Image (tube, rainbow, N blue to C red; front, side, top):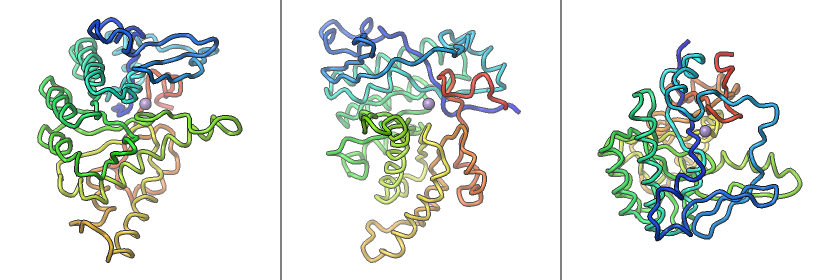
Amino acid sequence: MTVNSADSHVLEPSDLWLRNTPAKYRDRTLRVERDGDREAISIDGVVIRRNPVDTSGKVRAPGQGDPVARLHDLESQDVWAELMFPSLGLWLPMCPDRALSLELSRVYNDWLLDGFMSVSPRYIGAAIIPIVDIVDAVSEIERAAGLGFQAVNLPAHAPDERLYNEPAYEPVWSAIESTGVRMTSHVGTGADPVVARGRGGAVINYTETFFPPQRLIAHLVASGVLDAHPQMHVIVVEGGASWLPALMERMDEGYTQHGMWARPKLSALPSEIIRRQVHATFQHDRALLSTIDVTGVESLLWGSDYPHFEGTWPNTQH
Ligand code: MN
């Protein structure tokens, strides 16, 4: 069976931003350094320290760094097209500075266009959109759409002081709808994913990554954003999908049982809006098979996470 992947990645060179941001940003641009046995990713004074990816016993996909060889990897897995996200670039929303965050996003978006999207129409890039400033977000959405991007990625974790239900984002939603790009939100973007250290940390932190997408959907649906922008579609990526029916039921319950307080009024139940305009990607989510009659098929998108080690390569069809 030939499939499309709604969750794939590119592996950017670690010096992509060092080489391509203007000299005045040299000390603040995204850089990757070793810090003892850990890896430190710094952007404008924000430092994320993590254990380097453990490559022991793992086989790298031959096409992971080469857009032509990559097509052979896709053939071998019977994957046709890929919706592509960054790897290092997932950290870009951590940049707190307005001008620099726009610059960093543009460096990535231009590199993805030149290096992958121009090689094959099967490579469908998600442009990284900075949201430090709304005017800049709109301008990068419009620029990306003009360059041929069909998707834009906004951080899964909205800034605490500016959640996604706030009217300040209205120009962003209008730009997404009017350009026709799909809004995506990959897990692990917009906040340090290390929530807990010590006991249970690894599993806690992995589990925590699928809460922000649920919050994002709740905010966009309950605040009336998706209702007011019926052409807008949202794809939440790498958070699994079997929680979707629970969210639909919970939101319907809130909207009906607490209806006297529910503002704004929606033209349909939250579950109907989700079914119409929200999509979630999964890799190994067996539980969702039992709830397809609740979510509908179109809400569910498969993703390979190629070429990350947690992805399905080289066993995509098994
Ligand atoms: Mn992914």
